[in-house]
Image (cartoon, rainbow, N blue to C red):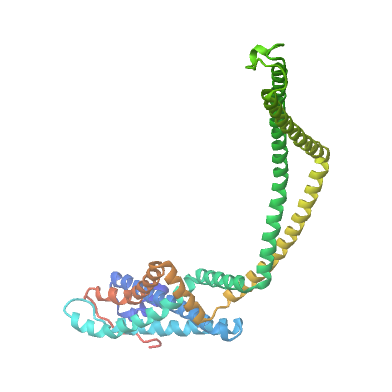
Length: 368
């Protein structure tokens, strides 16, 4: 029998010298390994719980030192509870009531230990989520309360709107120029049409004065009476009205042509000035954005430091907040960890109950 096997069998609460069959040697060695494993998991979880609880109240090195010291203490506590419980269980059939009575205290202790250890294990496994949630919460609160960051954000927004307006101004000027060109064409067409109408009115007045005798008079309905009668007066008034309209259109045409020529003449200077103004505003915006990023990074670092040094109470508060936000996800994790630890705690006991009753046992005390 190897030294390791004897060591593991002793951990199972049995005197190796009383075991005769190879099968029982393997059984008790496996049982001892489970006892060691369950005690080790419980001890590591307990050490982390001690560190999380003490870290906010003292230096990190001292908290770690106390956590390290607590690991072997808790390990031997759970280890000896397992050995003592396993030792009093008689394997085989016919003793179920007796064994149930014997393991009942161990069952209660397992529930207490599993609950006590599951809690810090949950905090450990979800430490990144807890810290991240707390960090986002701090950053959000800081963003809402920080006047400097809010002012920088407003300045950046105003500069961005100004730059956009300048960029659109160039487009608006181009659209206005195209509209002026189109309007110029429309006015020229109206003037051309009015020239035709005025020419016709001139012919019609001549025909009215001549009583319908003259060139192209057959196109007009005229009176046979010669002279400057009412018909001539009516055509003359119409002529003057159309002529006045044509003069006004020519004035508008001159203004539009002047605007078009001015735009084309100063186009290069306007675009250059606009580009310089946009560049200046963009430079201001970049400077404000740099200040905004620096301020936000400063806040993020502060939040990172705070989230890395959460107290035991703060971690639990964040865990509750995460549970509310993520629904059953956190609850499933907590229950799963508890059941896993509870299973580890009781596995040695259940395995011992399944041993056949074909050998004698003697509880082995250390040093005996």
